[in-house]
Length: 262
Image 1 (cartoon, rainbow, N blue to C red):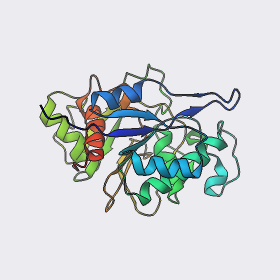
Image 2 (cartoon, helix red, strand yellow; image 1 turned 30 degrees about the vertical axis):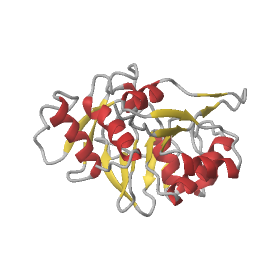
Image 3 (tube, one colour; image 1 turned 90 degrees about the vertical axis):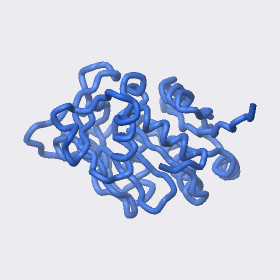
C-alpha cells in the first residue's frame, strides 16, 4: 500500500508576557490532525535563519488566536480598551508571515491570526470594537457562552473562496450550522462563535473582505492571486466536530498544503 505523505502544518503559539511561558490550546492541533495534517508547534524565539528553514520545510502555516497586536505595528497610539500585547510574538509572526508568503505557502488565520495577517500586509485593526464603533445592534463579539456554542451569524460573500469552501462542506457532509432561513440566499449565512474585542478595520492591500457580522464587523478575508490565504475572525477549531462547514475550513487548508487547491 502506497504511503501518502501528510503535510506538515506550522502553528504559532501563545505567549504569556508575565511568565514568559509559551503554550497552545489543543483544539487547533486536533482540527489539523482530523483534517489529515501533522501539526508542528513553532518556536517563539526562532532566529531569522530558523524561520527561513521552517518557511521552506513546512507545508502550511496557521496563525492562531491570542492577545492583541501592538498598536505601533499599524501606526497608532495605544487606546483605552486595548489589551495585552506580546512584542516577542508580534515580531516572530510578522517575520514568519513575510518569509512564508515569499515561499507562497498556504496560510490560514484564526482570530488574532486574521488581525496579524492584516497588519503584516499593511492594514489596520480596531483596538477595541465597543469603544471605536457605533452599532445599532451591538453584537456580542465576546460571547457569554462556551466556545463550542455559536453566538452570532456571519454573511459570506457569494462566489468567494470562503463561500465555496464552506458551502462545499454543506453539500458534501449534510447538515451544518447554516441558518435555515438564509441557506438558499445568494450569500451564505453561517452561525459562528466569537471571542474577540479587536477586528480588521481597513483591509490590507491585496486582501479581499469576504465575510461580515450583522453589525458590519469584518469576519473573513482571502487573497486573490495567492495560492491559498484564508483568515477568519471566529474560532472554527471549537466547532468542527459538529459543524462540517467549520471542518471544511481545516480540510481545505490541509489539502492546499498538500498541493490540492480548492
